[in-house]
Each structure stands twice: as C-alpha cells, then as structure tokens.
Amino acid sequence: MAERKPAKSEVESLTFEQAVERLEAIVAQIESGRIGLEQSIAEYERGAALVKRCRAILERSEQRVLELTAEGAKESGPPGKAAQRSEISAAQDDEEAPF
Image: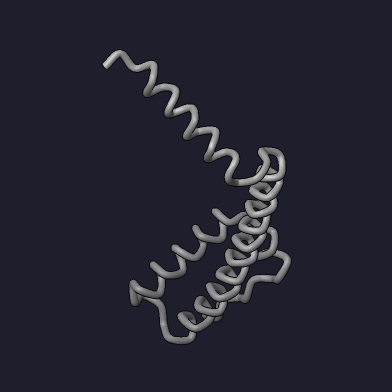
C-alpha cells in the first residue's frame, strides 16, 4: 500500500505542535516494524518534510525573540545600566537589613 506524499501546502499549514505530533506518529510507526520497507521510506519522506517545517518555524521564532530582546534592550538603556541599578538596589537592601 503506497502512502501518499503530503502536499507542500498541507505541511506548510501545520503548526509546530501539529508537525511534531505527526513526526512522533511516523517514528512510532516505523519503529514498530509493522510496516514494510516501501511504506517506511514513504513515511520517512513525510517525516523529512515535517522536520523541515519545524525547523522553519523554530528559526522564525528565534528571530522574533532576538528582535524582541533587541527592542527591550533599547527601551531599558545600555546593558550595564540595568545591572548597576540592581546592584545598587541590593546594596541598599543590605544596609536596611536589621541584622
């Protein structure tokens, strides 16, 4: 029984979680040994497309986190200033401690 290769748009429309879920199902199916070699290869191809989708989503997410981090750094000033403020605050707390 030949397994159809998923359409590109079908894979591209999946969320990260959906793609991972399908990948886990493919791995379980192949590892179970209940499918033949040809179907295993077809499933492997589907899995490769899903991995590509997951990597693309992760790369976009990583880029967005970097952008947000850079935006946050601009808003809070130079990196050293935040550390200095917390050190000063900690020193003031120590001075006010009753023991």
